[in-house]
Length: 215
Image (cartoon, rainbow, N blue to C red):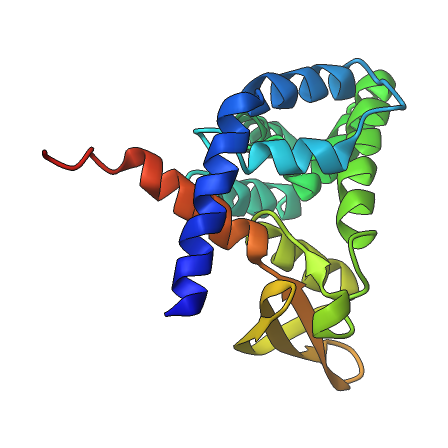
């Protein structure tokens, strides 16, 4: 009961902070900076701002199909279709680092060096922001994600398969422990992801969409 009350209080505080700030404006400004190739773009601030906007899609309901189709087209060496799918996904969620990375590769194949360099820089900036948030080796040092898609990015880059998921309550917030198996060696282990932002931002989103109570 105390944990539930604490969560509600935290959500209320975040709603107040969001109202005072301008996350949508910050998010848009950071996207512009990234597209302009600004080396000082704060990708951590971008990811955090994304979790505060009305269009926040923590579970990829709007982008998962686009990403799957884009990845399938990329594997089939159909970069035209892949770029169309990735562009549509990025328009909905600019923080999809793998969409930028695969777009960069397609642009390189097309000989568009300027676009390739821009997308590669964005992809690297987003990925560096994610992996610098922790090392994933323990609940205390869990990677701090802002969307569930980021879990998949980490596992894919590490070359491991998730086999089991366990939710752990910690002083730093909810943490997911994912048991893993290395795709090549078969070695087993675990990776930890702090999902506090996902949980709180999702709760805020639901609270905003809930109709006001009748007097």
